[in-house]
Image: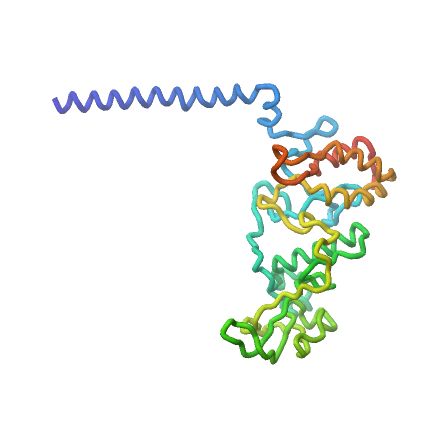
Length: 308
């Protein structure tokens, strides 16, 4: 009886295995494959591939860099937002920088390695999120001819305006009588003087490599920059995936004049194309209007081709 019961149980298990193999291993994948051929869904199922001259050049779901061999942005193209995915928009390295709002102090570069010809990265420099935002804002302003990429908590040199205030503290941790103040993101070998001359009557020093300023109170200084910077937030921050193909309408509008000049057309002509690739809020209420950079640049190459 025990052997008979065991055989029946194994036979039932085998039948269940066969049934579920057919249903889930063959039937379900076949159903999904057939659904993918429904008009309106097939393009998405195939990766939303974009073509130029009959050849695939990208996907409207994944952003791209529009830069030259040296990594410099090409003036004739709308630029995407920054990307932390690999060297930029690498689908195999999708992800963000994992830097948060408390990332305001840079890891300085070793001046000896810099003097030996090493790059800042090879010399150990790791910018904070604040410095990344400040430097990107300054770079975008120069590229777009704005002349001013100032943002709150940024120095004029494009790094985080952050002080280490050293001195005795009260019960709440506030420094009551500063004895020393250091601009931690401004190394002495790279500046003539810190962004701020005095803080609470104490002269501000530049940062000396190898010194530890963590015993001081870290104080970001807002400065006089406007609350609404001319360079929008998506121009200086990366998306969570690092692959976002969209930019804000504000960032697209900022780039119109430069692209028009590079393609020798009027800003109005470029703006007309931008409107065609502008998407509204999701379901009319979520998010903000966006512009797909990859589709927009391909459309501009077809309509207003440029050789430089």
